Length: 58
Image 1 (cartoon, one colour):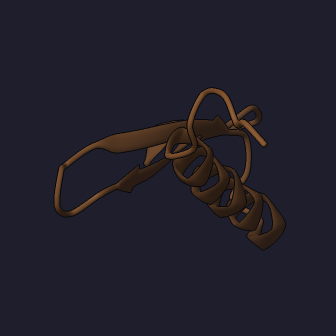
Image 2 (cartoon, rainbow, N blue to C red; image 1 turned 180 degrees about the vertical axis):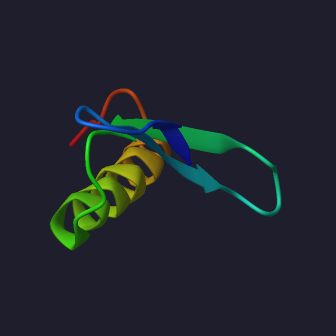
């Protein structure tokens, strides 16, 4: 989703979960494949880490 175009663009990377409609938004300044890939990695990491317990006992 383009927020601002021109010399200094601002783009919103939005991922929405289908079953819960929860959304994750990351603002970026370009749409290069590397940047979008990093957004997906950040999103997946956030989802995985949010499911871990706050304290891991061993």
